Image 1 (tube, helix red, strand yellow):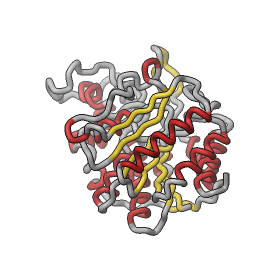
Image 2: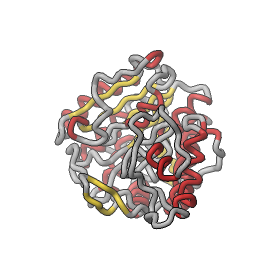
Image 3: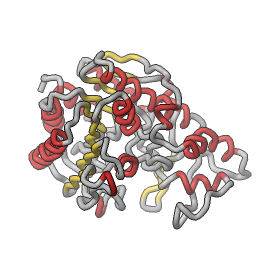
Image 4: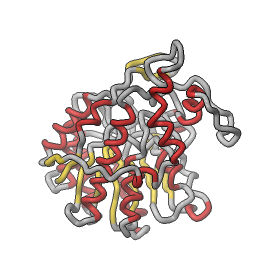
Length: 342
């Protein structure tokens, strides 16, 4: 399987993460790259660098205002006397339609949904090349050069809305890749298997009928992202019926997850999908620090095999999955399961 990664993705090195009122070390660490790369190579992946497709494919789903913010906020932030080393919001608008502030502090609150997406010196460059990694993967699929590819996109993307970062995410790599495929004449679906609901992806396509979004995740009633990901969220306007959320109870294991995956894949087939983007979170693992679901190594292999059984061209775009003894193994198992090595 072809795989894509750019070394500039190492340059995002977040230090902080505020959870339940406590300042903690950020779990979206650069070391994830070496673990995930080894896991992909263990499944036989051969890595290549992405091409630079420019801002066009990114701006197809993200607002120019937001992209300007991401590209310029860090140097602006550093000019504030006494500012912290990372851009972390301390205020949010009650209604995002009221006004757009000029200050860096105000814009941070407007464009960052939470305190889990700190921006530092290398963040924009890493996010840009993470997106280009996904774009190149989409191009490999659309050109017929590959029937399947793995994009090691880090930082991840599925919590990023069209104009808002959140949950370790800045540019929505899976959404960018799906829109790239649609622009090339495909009818793509996004299947999100991360333990957290892909709220940014849902928001990005919620009123559209040309890209299907499906997410299997831990029930958000008591789990991040809390406000999105419930079963009744089906889309709006032309998008009504083109968004499917399949929340699962905390601690759900392999058997129930795989039954739910079949429901998801049936919806993918019903959409007439001819290219599938898998938002590949590995944090559904029983060993993941977030402890949302309880998928085993064998479960990941079976997930890969079930996706392969669709017969569709597939682009795997890396989302979550945090440092544990089995992170790399789980990637090896899902990609090997997909390739028939269950």
